[in-house]
Length: 321
Ligand code: NAP
Image (cartoon, rainbow, N blue to C red; front, side):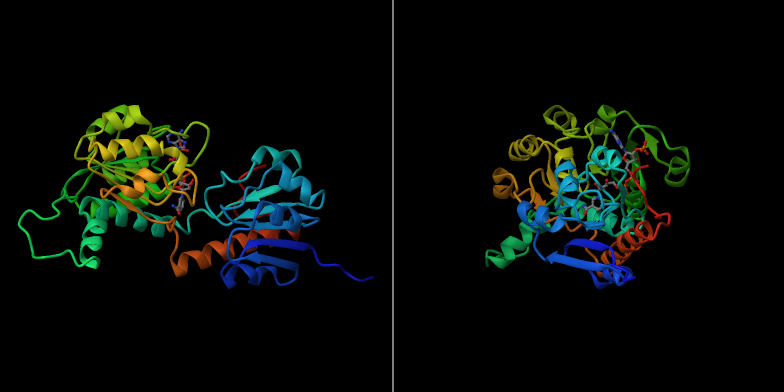
Protein backbone atom coordinates (compact mmCIF):
# COMPACT_ATOMS: atom_id res chain seq x y z
CA UNK A 1 0.00 0.00 0.00
CA UNK A 2 1.26 3.45 -0.89
CA UNK A 3 2.16 5.58 2.14
CA UNK A 4 0.86 9.12 1.79
CA UNK A 5 3.07 11.61 3.63
CA UNK A 6 1.38 13.95 6.10
CA UNK A 7 0.63 17.46 4.85
CA UNK A 8 2.54 20.25 6.55
CA UNK A 9 1.95 23.97 6.08
CA UNK A 10 4.78 26.40 6.80
CA UNK A 11 3.15 29.82 6.87
CA UNK A 12 6.23 31.95 6.02
CA UNK A 13 9.61 31.38 4.43
CA UNK A 14 11.81 30.28 7.32
CA UNK A 15 15.51 29.37 7.70
CA UNK A 16 16.45 26.07 6.06
CA UNK A 17 17.15 24.58 9.52
CA UNK A 18 13.40 24.51 10.13
CA UNK A 19 12.61 22.65 6.91
CA UNK A 20 15.21 19.90 7.35
CA UNK A 21 13.22 18.02 10.05
CA UNK A 22 10.20 18.09 7.72
CA UNK A 23 11.81 16.36 4.74
CA UNK A 24 9.60 13.26 5.00
CA UNK A 25 6.40 15.26 4.80
CA UNK A 26 4.44 16.89 2.00
CA UNK A 27 5.45 20.47 2.81
CA UNK A 28 3.95 23.69 1.47
CA UNK A 29 5.85 26.84 2.31
CA UNK A 30 3.88 30.05 1.85
CA UNK A 31 5.51 33.42 1.32
CA UNK A 32 8.23 35.68 2.62
CA UNK A 33 5.47 38.19 3.42
CA UNK A 34 2.64 37.35 5.85
CA UNK A 35 -0.17 35.55 4.02
CA UNK A 36 -3.51 37.33 3.65
CA UNK A 37 -6.21 35.77 5.79
CA UNK A 38 -7.93 34.18 2.78
CA UNK A 39 -4.64 32.73 1.52
CA UNK A 40 -3.92 31.30 4.95
CA UNK A 41 -7.33 29.65 5.32
CA UNK A 42 -7.11 28.23 1.83
CA UNK A 43 -3.65 26.80 2.47
CA UNK A 44 -4.84 25.30 5.78
CA UNK A 45 -7.22 22.83 4.10
CA UNK A 46 -6.61 19.27 5.32
CA UNK A 47 -3.14 19.86 6.76
CA UNK A 48 -1.82 17.60 9.51
CA UNK A 49 0.64 20.09 10.96
CA UNK A 50 1.36 23.81 10.81
CA UNK A 51 4.59 25.67 11.43
CA UNK A 52 3.39 29.20 12.11
CA UNK A 53 4.90 32.52 13.05
CA UNK A 54 3.52 35.38 15.13
CA UNK A 55 2.08 37.16 12.11
CA UNK A 56 -0.57 34.45 11.62
CA UNK A 57 -3.67 34.23 13.75
CA UNK A 58 -4.16 30.55 14.45
CA UNK A 59 -7.70 30.55 15.80
CA UNK A 60 -10.83 28.38 15.72
CA UNK A 61 -11.61 29.50 12.15
CA UNK A 62 -8.14 28.42 11.01
CA UNK A 63 -8.43 25.08 12.81
CA UNK A 64 -11.86 24.47 11.30
CA UNK A 65 -10.43 25.21 7.86
CA UNK A 66 -7.68 22.66 8.52
CA UNK A 67 -10.19 20.09 9.73
CA UNK A 68 -9.84 16.90 11.75
CA UNK A 69 -6.40 15.98 10.43
CA UNK A 70 -4.74 18.86 12.27
CA UNK A 71 -2.61 17.53 15.11
CA UNK A 72 0.01 20.18 15.77
CA UNK A 73 0.71 23.91 15.57
CA UNK A 74 4.42 24.59 16.05
CA UNK A 75 4.75 28.34 16.60
CA UNK A 76 8.19 29.70 15.74
CA UNK A 77 8.25 32.11 18.70
CA UNK A 78 8.30 31.86 22.48
CA UNK A 79 5.15 34.01 22.70
CA UNK A 80 2.01 32.22 21.52
CA UNK A 81 -0.63 34.93 21.95
CA UNK A 82 -1.40 34.51 18.22
CA UNK A 83 -2.63 30.95 18.86
CA UNK A 84 -6.02 30.24 20.45
CA UNK A 85 -5.07 27.59 23.02
CA UNK A 86 -8.68 27.03 24.01
CA UNK A 87 -9.63 26.19 20.43
CA UNK A 88 -6.55 23.93 20.18
CA UNK A 89 -7.44 22.09 23.39
CA UNK A 90 -11.01 21.54 22.25
CA UNK A 91 -9.71 19.89 19.10
CA UNK A 92 -6.84 17.97 20.73
CA UNK A 93 -4.27 19.98 18.76
CA UNK A 94 -0.81 20.18 20.33
CA UNK A 95 0.73 23.68 20.36
CA UNK A 96 4.48 24.15 20.77
CA UNK A 97 6.75 27.21 21.07
CA UNK A 98 10.49 28.00 21.01
CA UNK A 99 11.65 29.05 24.50
CA UNK A 100 15.24 29.48 25.78
CA UNK A 101 17.09 29.69 22.45
CA UNK A 102 16.13 33.35 21.94
CA UNK A 103 16.69 34.67 25.47
CA UNK A 104 20.17 36.12 24.96
CA UNK A 105 19.46 37.63 21.54
CA UNK A 106 16.24 39.26 22.71
CA UNK A 107 17.98 40.56 25.83
CA UNK A 108 20.65 42.07 23.55
CA UNK A 109 17.86 43.84 21.65
CA UNK A 110 16.34 45.19 24.86
CA UNK A 111 19.72 46.49 25.99
CA UNK A 112 20.45 47.96 22.56
CA UNK A 113 17.16 49.91 22.72
CA UNK A 114 17.81 50.95 26.30
CA UNK A 115 21.21 52.40 25.43
CA UNK A 116 20.02 53.93 22.16
CA UNK A 117 17.02 55.63 23.78
CA UNK A 118 18.99 56.97 26.75
CA UNK A 119 21.90 58.22 24.66
CA UNK A 120 19.72 59.50 21.80
CA UNK A 121 21.29 57.41 19.06
CA UNK A 122 18.33 57.64 16.66
CA UNK A 123 18.19 61.40 16.95
CA UNK A 124 21.96 61.67 16.44
CA UNK A 125 21.89 59.41 13.40
CA UNK A 126 19.12 61.49 11.84
CA UNK A 127 21.19 64.65 12.37
CA UNK A 128 24.31 63.11 10.78
CA UNK A 129 22.45 61.66 7.80
CA UNK A 130 20.61 64.91 7.12
CA UNK A 131 23.89 66.83 7.02
CA UNK A 132 22.74 68.87 10.01
CA UNK A 133 25.76 68.06 12.22
CA UNK A 134 27.85 71.21 12.55
CA UNK A 135 30.29 70.51 15.35
CA UNK A 136 30.93 68.67 18.58
CA UNK A 137 28.84 70.39 21.23
CA UNK A 138 29.31 70.58 25.00
CA UNK A 139 25.52 70.44 25.43
CA UNK A 140 24.65 68.46 22.35
CA UNK A 141 22.39 65.38 22.61
CA UNK A 142 22.82 64.86 26.33
CA UNK A 143 21.00 61.97 27.96
CA UNK A 144 21.04 60.10 31.24
CA UNK A 145 23.83 57.69 32.12
CA UNK A 146 22.85 54.05 32.01
CA UNK A 147 25.62 52.63 34.20
CA UNK A 148 25.00 52.65 37.93
CA UNK A 149 21.26 53.38 37.55
CA UNK A 150 18.21 51.41 38.71
CA UNK A 151 16.78 48.99 36.16
CA UNK A 152 13.19 47.89 36.72
CA UNK A 153 12.31 44.62 35.03
CA UNK A 154 8.63 43.83 34.57
CA UNK A 155 8.35 40.05 34.09
CA UNK A 156 11.46 38.45 35.57
CA UNK A 157 11.41 35.26 33.50
CA UNK A 158 13.95 33.90 31.04
CA UNK A 159 14.45 37.07 28.96
CA UNK A 160 14.00 39.43 31.93
CA UNK A 161 16.82 37.63 33.74
CA UNK A 162 19.03 37.64 30.64
CA UNK A 163 18.60 41.45 30.62
CA UNK A 164 19.57 41.53 34.32
CA UNK A 165 22.80 39.65 33.47
CA UNK A 166 23.71 42.39 30.99
CA UNK A 167 22.77 45.13 33.47
CA UNK A 168 25.22 43.74 36.02
CA UNK A 169 28.03 44.61 33.62
CA UNK A 170 26.76 48.19 33.73
CA UNK A 171 26.76 48.20 37.56
CA UNK A 172 23.00 48.66 37.59
CA UNK A 173 20.77 47.90 40.55
CA UNK A 174 18.07 45.39 39.59
CA UNK A 175 14.48 45.82 40.74
CA UNK A 176 11.69 43.63 39.43
CA UNK A 177 7.94 43.18 39.48
CA UNK A 178 5.90 40.18 38.43
CA UNK A 179 3.42 37.68 39.69
CA UNK A 180 5.65 36.34 42.43
CA UNK A 181 9.10 36.87 44.00
CA UNK A 182 11.90 34.73 42.60
CA UNK A 183 14.31 33.84 45.36
CA UNK A 184 16.95 32.11 43.25
CA UNK A 185 17.15 35.00 40.81
CA UNK A 186 17.21 37.49 43.70
CA UNK A 187 20.33 35.77 45.01
CA UNK A 188 21.95 35.63 41.57
CA UNK A 189 21.36 39.28 40.69
CA UNK A 190 20.95 40.90 44.11
CA UNK A 191 17.54 41.87 42.72
CA UNK A 192 14.71 43.39 44.78
CA UNK A 193 11.03 42.45 44.31
CA UNK A 194 8.59 45.38 44.31
CA UNK A 195 4.92 45.92 43.61
CA UNK A 196 4.51 47.37 40.12
CA UNK A 197 3.54 50.84 41.37
CA UNK A 198 6.65 51.03 43.56
CA UNK A 199 8.85 49.71 40.76
CA UNK A 200 7.58 52.42 38.42
CA UNK A 201 8.29 55.14 40.94
CA UNK A 202 11.76 53.94 41.77
CA UNK A 203 13.34 52.77 38.51
CA UNK A 204 15.35 54.88 36.07
CA UNK A 205 14.87 52.32 33.28
CA UNK A 206 11.87 50.03 32.79
CA UNK A 207 12.27 46.95 30.59
CA UNK A 208 9.14 44.90 29.89
CA UNK A 209 9.28 41.10 29.49
CA UNK A 210 5.86 39.66 30.29
CA UNK A 211 3.91 37.53 27.84
CA UNK A 212 0.80 39.09 26.29
CA UNK A 213 -2.26 37.80 28.13
CA UNK A 214 -5.59 39.28 29.23
CA UNK A 215 -3.96 40.43 32.48
CA UNK A 216 -0.96 42.07 30.81
CA UNK A 217 -2.92 43.93 28.10
CA UNK A 218 -2.32 47.66 28.80
CA UNK A 219 -0.56 46.72 32.02
CA UNK A 220 1.36 49.92 31.34
CA UNK A 221 -1.30 52.56 30.78
CA UNK A 222 -1.53 56.33 31.37
CA UNK A 223 -1.75 55.89 35.15
CA UNK A 224 1.39 53.73 35.25
CA UNK A 225 3.33 56.12 33.00
CA UNK A 226 2.31 58.94 35.33
CA UNK A 227 4.14 57.21 38.18
CA UNK A 228 7.45 57.08 36.33
CA UNK A 229 10.26 59.61 36.80
CA UNK A 230 10.55 62.39 34.19
CA UNK A 231 14.09 61.18 33.40
CA UNK A 232 13.00 57.53 33.05
CA UNK A 233 13.34 55.43 29.90
CA UNK A 234 10.85 52.71 28.95
CA UNK A 235 11.84 49.72 26.80
CA UNK A 236 9.35 47.23 25.39
CA UNK A 237 10.48 44.06 23.65
CA UNK A 238 7.58 41.91 24.91
CA UNK A 239 4.38 42.46 22.90
CA UNK A 240 2.92 45.80 21.81
CA UNK A 241 -0.45 45.65 23.60
CA UNK A 242 1.25 45.34 27.02
CA UNK A 243 1.74 49.12 26.71
CA UNK A 244 -1.02 51.55 25.79
CA UNK A 245 0.71 53.08 22.78
CA UNK A 246 -1.44 56.24 22.63
CA UNK A 247 -0.78 56.93 26.32
CA UNK A 248 2.95 56.32 25.80
CA UNK A 249 3.05 58.69 22.82
CA UNK A 250 1.38 61.36 24.92
CA UNK A 251 3.76 60.88 27.87
CA UNK A 252 6.76 61.10 25.51
CA UNK A 253 5.40 64.15 23.68
CA UNK A 254 4.83 65.97 26.96
CA UNK A 255 8.26 64.86 28.24
CA UNK A 256 6.65 63.20 31.23
CA UNK A 257 9.23 60.45 30.69
CA UNK A 258 12.57 60.99 28.99
CA UNK A 259 12.49 58.44 26.18
CA UNK A 260 11.40 55.00 25.01
CA UNK A 261 12.81 52.16 22.95
CA UNK A 262 10.24 49.93 21.24
CA UNK A 263 10.52 46.71 19.29
CA UNK A 264 6.82 45.81 19.36
CA UNK A 265 3.56 47.65 18.64
CA UNK A 266 -0.15 47.28 19.22
CA UNK A 267 -1.10 46.93 15.54
CA UNK A 268 2.04 45.72 13.78
CA UNK A 269 3.25 46.78 11.30
CA UNK A 270 1.31 50.00 12.04
CA UNK A 271 2.98 52.37 14.49
CA UNK A 272 1.00 55.05 16.31
CA UNK A 273 1.37 58.17 14.08
CA UNK A 274 2.31 60.34 17.04
CA UNK A 275 5.26 58.06 17.87
CA UNK A 276 6.58 58.45 14.33
CA UNK A 277 6.82 62.21 14.85
CA UNK A 278 8.71 62.10 18.14
CA UNK A 279 12.47 62.39 18.51
CA UNK A 280 12.61 60.72 21.93
CA UNK A 281 11.60 57.23 20.88
CA UNK A 282 13.71 54.60 19.15
CA UNK A 283 11.59 52.38 16.90
CA UNK A 284 12.72 48.90 15.85
CA UNK A 285 10.62 46.67 13.55
CA UNK A 286 10.14 43.64 15.85
CA UNK A 287 13.69 42.29 15.52
CA UNK A 288 14.07 41.00 19.09
CA UNK A 289 15.31 37.53 18.12
CA UNK A 290 16.60 38.45 14.66
CA UNK A 291 20.13 37.05 14.68
CA UNK A 292 21.34 34.46 12.17
CA UNK A 293 22.08 31.94 14.90
CA UNK A 294 18.91 32.39 16.91
CA UNK A 295 16.49 32.27 13.99
CA UNK A 296 18.16 29.01 12.84
CA UNK A 297 17.65 27.54 16.31
CA UNK A 298 14.04 28.71 16.56
CA UNK A 299 13.19 27.29 13.14
CA UNK A 300 14.89 23.95 13.91
CA UNK A 301 13.12 23.73 17.26
CA UNK A 302 9.70 24.34 15.71
CA UNK A 303 10.38 21.88 12.86
CA UNK A 304 11.57 19.16 15.24
CA UNK A 305 8.58 19.51 17.53
CA UNK A 306 6.20 19.42 14.57
CA UNK A 307 7.85 16.23 13.32
CA UNK A 308 7.77 14.68 16.80
CA UNK A 309 4.00 15.13 17.11
CA UNK A 310 3.30 13.78 13.62
CA UNK A 311 5.52 10.76 14.43
CA UNK A 312 3.56 10.13 17.63
CA UNK A 313 6.44 11.22 19.84
CA UNK A 314 6.52 13.72 22.71
CA UNK A 315 7.44 17.26 21.54
CA UNK A 316 10.06 19.08 23.61
CA UNK A 317 8.15 22.36 24.02
CA UNK A 318 4.40 21.84 24.32
CA UNK A 319 2.44 24.78 25.74
CA UNK A 320 -0.90 22.98 26.16
CA UNK A 321 -2.07 19.56 27.36
P1 NAP B 1 8.92 33.74 30.56
O1 NAP B 1 10.21 33.07 30.86
O2 NAP B 1 7.66 32.97 30.70
O3 NAP B 1 8.85 35.07 31.46
C1 NAP B 1 7.73 35.88 31.51
C2 NAP B 1 7.63 36.50 32.89
O4 NAP B 1 6.48 37.35 32.94
C3 NAP B 1 7.48 35.47 34.01
O5 NAP B 1 8.37 35.78 35.05
C4 NAP B 1 6.04 35.66 34.44
O6 NAP B 1 5.82 35.38 35.81
C5 NAP B 1 5.81 37.11 34.15
N1 NAP B 1 4.37 37.40 34.04
C6 NAP B 1 3.40 36.65 33.46
N2 NAP B 1 2.20 37.24 33.61
C7 NAP B 1 2.41 38.36 34.32
C8 NAP B 1 1.55 39.37 34.83
N3 NAP B 1 0.23 39.31 34.64
N4 NAP B 1 2.11 40.38 35.54
C9 NAP B 1 3.43 40.43 35.75
N5 NAP B 1 4.30 39.48 35.30
C10 NAP B 1 3.79 38.47 34.60
O7 NAP B 1 8.90 34.30 29.07
P2 NAP B 1 10.17 34.78 28.20
O8 NAP B 1 10.70 33.63 27.44
O9 NAP B 1 11.06 35.59 29.04
O10 NAP B 1 9.41 35.71 27.12
C11 NAP B 1 8.64 36.83 27.53
C12 NAP B 1 7.88 37.40 26.35
O11 NAP B 1 8.78 38.13 25.52
C13 NAP B 1 7.26 36.39 25.39
O12 NAP B 1 6.01 35.94 25.85
C14 NAP B 1 7.15 37.12 24.09
O13 NAP B 1 5.87 37.69 23.94
C15 NAP B 1 8.21 38.22 24.23
N6 NAP B 1 9.28 38.07 23.23
C16 NAP B 1 9.46 39.05 22.30
C17 NAP B 1 10.49 38.94 21.37
C18 NAP B 1 10.71 39.99 20.35
O14 NAP B 1 11.06 39.67 19.23
N7 NAP B 1 10.55 41.25 20.67
C19 NAP B 1 11.34 37.83 21.40
C20 NAP B 1 11.14 36.87 22.36
C21 NAP B 1 10.09 36.99 23.28
P3 NAP B 1 5.82 33.87 36.40
O15 NAP B 1 7.26 33.52 36.53
O16 NAP B 1 5.11 34.00 37.69
O17 NAP B 1 5.12 33.03 35.37
